[in-house]
Length: 274
Image (tube, rainbow, N blue to C red; front, side, top):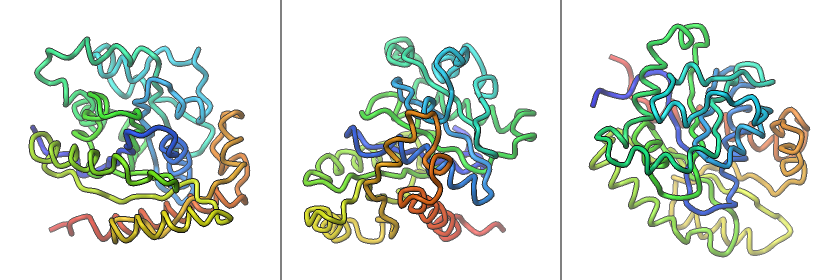
């Protein structure tokens, strides 16, 4: 396979556990990156389509979706939609993605469908017009072919972990999958970082989980911690990212800090151009 494109940077958000804030992070990190000047495309690979809904794309407006892209019925540029956030676009998903794995299981390029689609996008007129600098891929809560496609297409993986007792449970399986993908499908894949979510400062357990995860994963864990915040929970029901719903709430401010931290880490991770 050809090298991943130098631009945009492709980050996939993955964790096979559900309810860890993965989609919330995709929506609000994308918005925060856009707010500080980046041009961002969110690719929704979760059949539930919550990232699409949270960015204001109604189900009736998803005539072209990531299912159509991965099944080969349309190019990625045809599925891209504007959001209410300046400099933020989304390729929405539909429940049709549930059947995709069976449909493409015998195809030789089954693990590279998303990678090929992104490479096609970078050669398109739309890409030149939009100037996208980051692609965030919201994965389903499982290590299935959709997630493998995301890992094969990505430069790095970002892992949301909820501040709960079993936070580290399953992380070793995810990291093992990353190693397998790196060895067989995408040698450039790196761990961008682990973001701790749903932190409750009133709960001693949350503080203990933070300490345990940092002790286990070290510098891989971002400094920024996303608090449990009612405004973040309310925002999707209005089809808005938290930063549009309530910019001043603790959750929105945390995602802005996370975006800045990711930009800084990107500068440290990217090879210096010759």
